[in-house]
Image (spheres, rainbow, N blue to C red):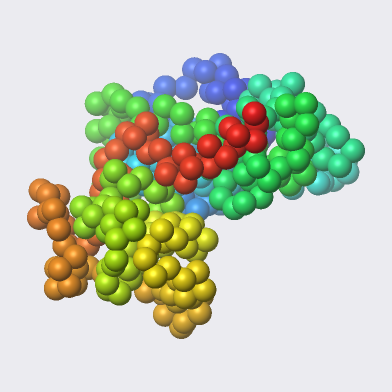
Length: 361
């Protein structure tokens, strides 16, 4: 087990090192508190601050904490935990490899092994998909679409990228972002998985702790997924009215705009959505959305609670889940957590795909 494996535990070489050492995870969680504690810290930091915490000074502990952390994430078994954990591991990896790429001289002058760009490209089968260019890199368009799919902002859309001979031009820092996404995909792959009962029993207290950490946090602002099929019935109804161009009262417009803001939609995206509405004025709509978002006001407004929606007559088509939940955001978060990954097709990605396919053609 090498320090490089501990820094990048998702590498195939790291997995092989653990297998070569004939590590039994059941024995580890039963007897090695240092590994378990570090694994808990990995997941807890991912949930609370988007990092994986400070690495342990012992290489073995740091490396083995990664598979144990994956076990913990599988036992907690909520979408938000899985998503935040994979993102935190990827963010940490990007920070590390970006520093190592930039510190070639420092690493050459020490015995510390570093990861190279060529190694990472080979690790994720990207060696032929990514080629050098005078002003950065060229990436095969299919690879680009796959790894840039989760990126927000117009600059990542294929229609806004230089494209020639089936390859997209990108800068070095953008390649680092795409590598981060490849890492996130690998970390998330297979999560959650079935954990043997004997191992799960050893981790009951740790799983309970992490579940409590999740329960104590307000994670609704972290949602960045737009899946209308999973919206609460009230928001589905308001969205349907918007798309049909029907008139909405001010309180209804406020409710749907606040909800869409809370789930990650940008002002531009919401303004585009409202264009079909009677009396649409882009300047006024943009101001209202920015005001709700807190960009042009001292207050960031939240989605109205169910009681407020009821008082204004916007609470419609209640279902069984509505009976148990008192806020539209809590409803949506629950539906997101319970959904399978193949159900989480972001509406924005579907709209962007049409533009990208047209550009590729």
